[in-house]
Image (cartoon, rainbow, N blue to C red; front, side):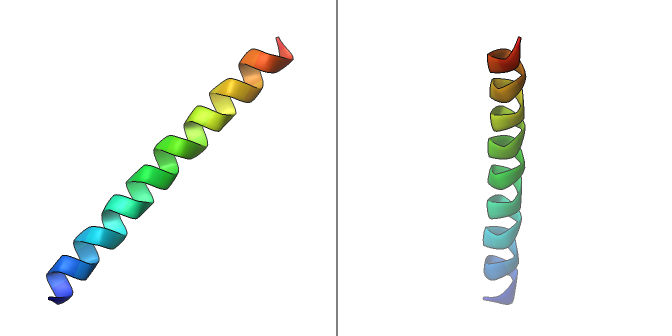
Length: 32
């Protein structure tokens, strides 16, 4: 169960990172 929770946290972190970089790319695209 603990392993399962850790996996979910890791997935959320990865998702957030991807989402964040997407937003950054979008901002760069919009400013240019």
